[in-house]
Image (cartoon, rainbow, N blue to C red; front, side):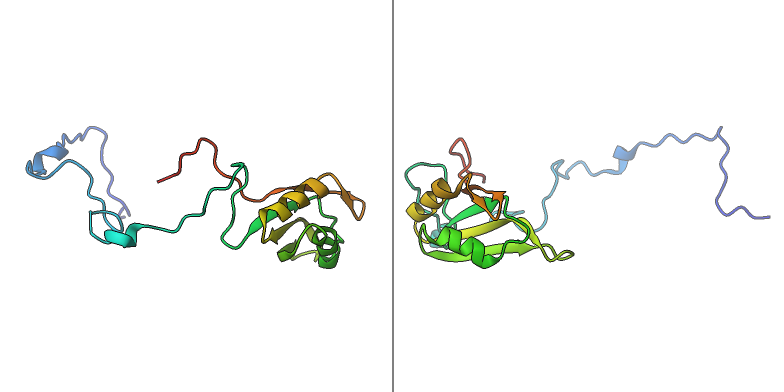
Length: 155
C-alpha cells in the first residue's frame, strides 16, 4: 500500500542556511511595486496642486463640495420626505434631501441628510431643530462633516 504523503521519521533533521544562496549585492530594502513605488514627474508643475475648500470662521463644520450638509437623527420610521422637507425648509433653501429607507421593511432608517447652500441656513436649522420633535420623535441635528482636530491633514 502506498502512502499519499511521504512519511519522515522524527530522527531525520535537516540543517538549512537560507541566507547562503542570497546574492550579497542585492539591496536589503523591500522594493515597492505599483502606483507610488518610484519617484516620477506625474505631479510636477500645476498637476500636483489639488483643489481645496476654503476655511470658514468657526472651524467646527466642513463644507462639502456642493454645500453645507446637516445630519438629522431620530427621524420617525413612518416619516415621509415631505414631512422632513417642510420642517427644515423654513430655515433656508434646501438643495438636497436624502431620507434613506430600509430595504427589508420599507420604513425610514432613522436619519436624514439635508444640504443647504449657505452655512447660515444650515446653522440656523441646527439651532432651530435640534431637540425638537417631528411626528412624536425627538430629533438630533448636527453637522454631517466636521473638520479634524489638531489642524493637521493626512498625507
